[in-house]
Every structure is written in structure tokens, then in C-alpha cells.
Amino acid sequence: MREALAEAELALRTGDVPVGAVVLGPDGAILGRGHNEREATGDPTGHAEVLALREAAQRRGEWRLSGCSLVVTLEPCVMCAGATVLSRVDRLVYGARDVKAGAVGSRWDLVRDPRQNHRPEVVPPDLISEDVAFRCSDLLSRFFARRRIR
Image (cartoon, rainbow, N blue to C red; front, side, top):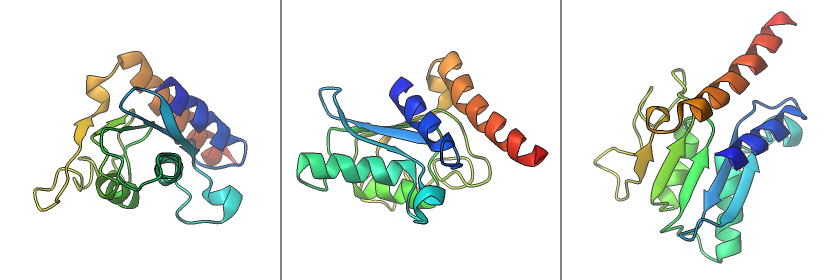
């Protein structure tokens, strides 16, 4: 999660919402990294998770990321939860809940829907270090607090 947080910090430089993600291979090596780039690139699919999954698939040479874990600082939205399922990652770890748009239990639960043909294991914030979960949510809280002041 430290690497995902470092990616989230990179998003701040371009005014993007500070969300970062990494894809870990079965051996724990980082296969893909991403941070939000919607503002920087004007790409509506420029979410951290999508970018990290793309890089991991390219590095691996296939779209199936079986045996891999996606670690992200914020609960994925519907698009990113769908990409998580479709990429066949085995585990999804996220650091902060998204009560407005989260699709891993907060608003919807796309990844655990029994109608899906693949359902990754989910590790929510309450099952990770309290300090790490706080850092993920605090980064987002500070970002949005600064935006409201302007």
C-alpha cells in the first residue's frame, strides 16, 4: 500500500484526485502502477486502477492477471471494479471506502456479485493496518478540503 500511496501523491501534481494503485504479481513484484490522470490527460478512463491493470497486462503479455493482487488507495468505482473482475485478479485490497461511488460494498458490490464469472477476494480497509487506512482516507480528505476552500 505504500507504493499505491506514493502513486496517489503523484496525482496531486496534476490536480487529479489522489488515488494510486499497484498490481502485484504472484511473487509480490510490482507489475503495474497507476495514479489518477483524468485531469492531466483528459481521458475519462484515466483512473489509477485501469492504468495499473493495463501496465500489468502489458508487462505480463496477457490480459488475464490470475495470481495477481490489485492494491488501491480508494475503493474502486463501477468502471474500475468491472476492470478488476474482467482482468481476473485474485485479490483486491483497498485503503479507503467511497460511500458516494464505491462499487466494492459501499454503494454497489460489483466484485462479489454472484452473477459474475470471477470474484476476487476483497480486503477492505477494516482488514488492513489502521495507520495505512487512515493515510489513504486522510490524503483524500485533505485534497477535497482544499478544493472546498477555493
